[in-house]
Image (cartoon, rainbow, N blue to C red; front, side, top):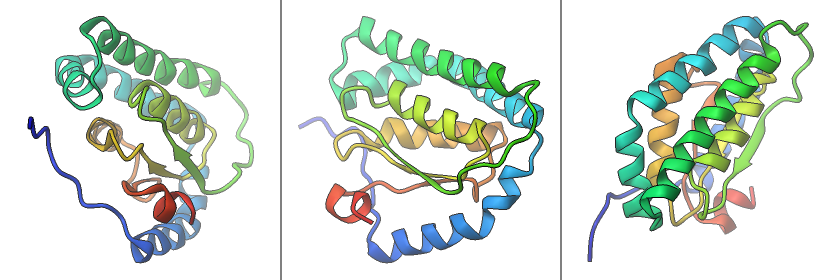
Length: 169
């Protein structure tokens, strides 16, 4: 009976709009210098650490994580952000693949979500992020932090919803 939050699920029109926007804006994010993308990912890691208690609570309440597992989720997510930032900091600019859809599982709603999203963003790809149906709130908050860190809205779009609608598109 514990209500953690609510979410409005994306529908087919939302998905089509997000895909069109991702294609239209792919070059903008791809041409951001890799060092700048690395700085953004490091800022996101700093923000995640700063807001870790909020993420612990979300992981516990939304995903049923234990306290040690919630701590591990946040630590791993921070590690992913810093790892991919370090991988691209001094790299030569390369061609991104284009829009990437990241679909995360419910059992690692922050760590795997952030690992997929940060890897794709680091490489210069725009991302359509679809969290597990069971754990959209922790992913939504992570997307907010990435935007706050400097990832443009056009480079990272959040699409919560059912797999047969959002994931199938």
